[in-house]
Image 1: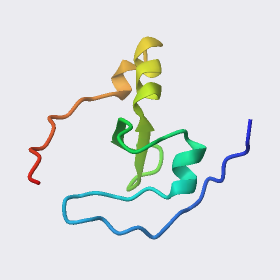
Image 2 (image 1 turned 180 degrees about the horizontal axis):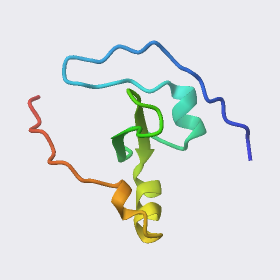
Image 3 (image 1 turned 30 degrees about the vertical axis):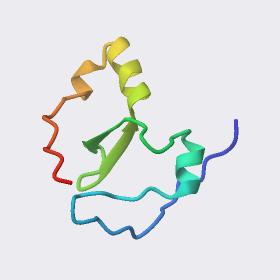
Image 4 (image 1 turned 45 degrees about the vertical axis):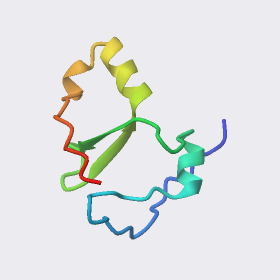
Length: 80
């Protein structure tokens, strides 16, 4: 397995609709592509930080009994 470059990448600006562009290198390392599903979570291990977790990993957490780590939130309206 290829060693991941943990970063940091940035600073990154948050767009007017709350978007954050992920660097191409990071997306490739994590096997993410445009349109991939991710969860955004507050990191309880390091206050004031976020985790961006691929949907597949959250599914694994749920299957293994770590469901309490996942809390669904209502989807914001798409104001395009």
